[in-house]
Image (cartoon, rainbow, N blue to C red):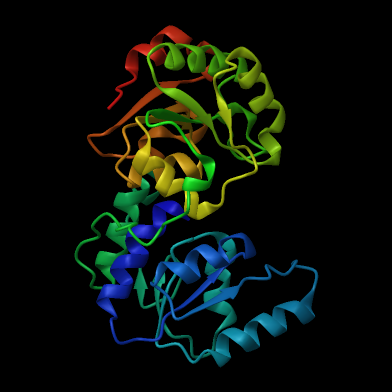
Length: 291
């Protein structure tokens, strides 16, 4: 979702007078409604393949939208199926579905960095460039946290079913202590899934401030704009920190294909290992650039 912000903004600019609808899942509705890029946000119910009645309802809703153009940025098997669901007269479609009007057929598409793949796909549909998004709309009230003037964001989480994407919380704890010694108070963010990891880090570094479960999506960009540095795994909040201009250090394993997902800006550094267990605290601490 975060890596699609650039295309979202560009599509909005390319179709300034259009009524644009986003189809997404429930967790992203509020975020996308407040972005200003969409006029409507629909929840994709993602019907199970064994539920024909739900598929019929989805088809009726999609057809009822009377869309002139569809940009499929997911380009998954499911989203490609939605093109065929709208037959016999589907709208003009940018994606990979066989028979669509603006089919992305680059044979290297799956090896391209996500940003390059998206830009290449949109170029086929006549959109020539995809600049980085402006996240100035992503504003949260972080005064309620009463944070110190100089702090560092630590993001120890990642998707719950991909443990290989996570650097060990014990190592984050050791890194937090070093940050504190360098005058940057560690601020920990995460969800309920990271509760135990955050406790481990706080135990290793009592100076750390644990905001686990207390932040909203809109707080993340505001925190990043004020942070001296952000350090974390390949996860949405770290990508938001990078897009917000915060000096960011991302820790990547081979499981996340760095050549496809690594942020590409001068203020972002990535350390990669086939297995993050082989990445030591010394190396991470040395790579940090505090502002």
